[in-house]
Length: 430
Image 1: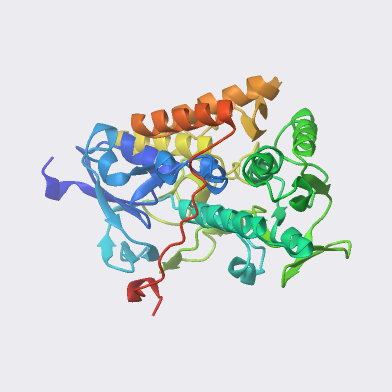
Image 2: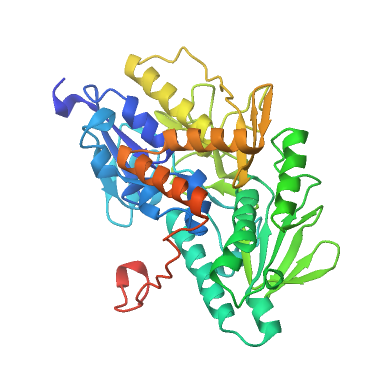
């Protein structure tokens, strides 16, 4: 078909959903433009490994332009930009740089942090929803370790090394576990002037269990593993306030925290929408879609992955915001657009859930099968290794993991403060 007769599809977001969609859409039938705030795809399940100096950022990131130069994504047009608004009537997507027209729109922008109405928290807590946030967290942790190693005042040292992790989901458990490994194994080896008891790690979870989506056995084992790593797990504890390093809990008690790490919730990426009737948006800033991922009360607009809210009998509150859901929805939508028919309703194939706490300590629920410990840890490593884009990335991650396993060391604990100057107007620094 001549290029000027092809329908133009604009895809917002190059995460799991968007990337799998563009890989499977027929480039001979459609002109496809991918819009993303970054020029690379990242692997969010391993952000915590960057934050804990276990992996370098480049190991879990893959430039879009390399991906669209070859392979299944070849032929895609990439535009850098953060989407500011979408006009459903005039069929345009506007970023800070340009306005792009579309015939069909696929919204796959993913999630951001949910502060449950207390948006001022984002100015003071550390979060883990992007590579940049993970690097910022890593630098802060290393900075605190270096300052504490030369601090002579014992009370000041303990304040520097007081960490509170908010949220007992997979991200919170994995971050707390990484800090626990730092306390148990790295501190005695590399920071002789710091005692293990100087570093405190508190994991707060508002419900009565960690890893709420997993089995009771996995939940209990996660607590046991964290306690082995000297993490103070506190269930049924909500943070109600954070002010000047003081964390106030729902029971009225308070904790001093030099660094608060927020993993308590997610919400869809906010996108301003114009010229559309109300009612298309659901809870958690997710677009209401039918069983084919078509956004309700719109024409030729689709939402996939974390941005979609598909209410079914099995999932009345929508599907879990997991990578596998995003991957499966992206592929299915592409297949149906290729055929120009919507005959296959989306059915989520749940392949299981897993979380790692530390070296040789992980839990996995794979259907009716539960595994834990070293076997689950190997399974977790294998699946995540396969999921990372690029053979170079896979080899790099495998080498880093193997070296860390046998040596308990890493060459990645380098404190890299970015230069402040010159200020950049386009980044809002002037």
